[in-house]
Figure (cartoon, rainbow, N blue to C red):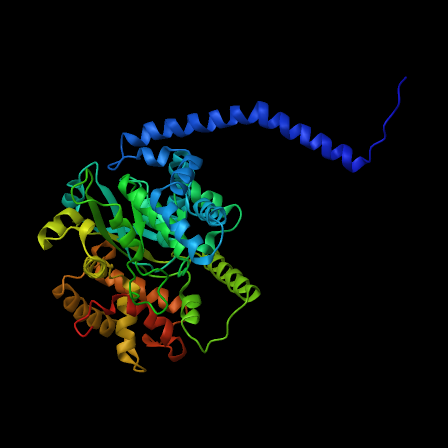
Length: 471
């Protein structure tokens, strides 16, 4: 006897979809994973022969294994127990929270994504938007870094392009692991960022359990020799000046360093600057408590208008990209040598003394970063025009004033980048960009800073203000 069973169409489609997914998972996904791993391994073999700092085994471990290692770390377990006891909750609830934090933080580095997709995008986007230059590099110091050392690039933070440009320019030396803020935690983008080896952090989090999980991940990565990049300022500059640094992440890294361990920890100061920062007006507004907060619609409209303006310049053959972007690599600072010179051992310092020593090292590094910030055409010209106030100035007089400013900067050993080794061209390039942006009025061969655009001009002048004699 046979009977027929009638199913609703939606249920039949659901069963078919589940069957197709099971078939895909059992038959096709293993082959796809093997293909991806084989491509990644070939890239690892290739880049391993040319990188100055090799990819560490820690970065090749499966992500789930790193998450498990972080969750079951002794210090994390103790922190979870203390968290549960303080709140009168079951330990399992605290461990569930630890697991969520670990999944949020731990990256999923993929060499193929980093060196094929990421490098290609970074290189082409950087060179499309800017004339990218390396101004100064302490090659002798960089080449003297031991192969097994943990290297951390310490830099200032002017733009979200910093991630892209620094990774592109450092790609011949190492794969950089960044701490990325919550702004990037959107579907699609966060998967790509994790594959690039970055880890997510919650800025200004007061959650002690979260901070302990983050601390242990950074310490583990440092102890394993993973090359990292850090912005002690935490966020983007709001007025063009370097922000007051915070050394929490630096402290976490030092917890992964042991004076008598097998690896040295080496910090490399790195200074960046731009003739034009994509987020300049947005950052100025964010730093002005009295300014009205713009919504997404207004921000989207500003972005569209910016793109339209650039296309219009391109169509008229007047587009000169966004000017120059320059990076300087400074002299590496060995923590082992630093500690020996100060006769300290970070592993055994009392809490207050440790905080003071971490701050002393951090301030030294940020002073070096400040000295490395490149002096570019736009900041130079903006500084001179602001000094003139409402007084109009001719081009020859402007060049003479820039020359006097340059001599002051050279006397203080500032790192100046001179395009084409020609100061006349450099001043002309900076002035052209400011006029095109309507920040400066040009009438009958005379130039004057627009009063209503003084904050934006000051934003660029501030990038080198700390290098001037009266800073």
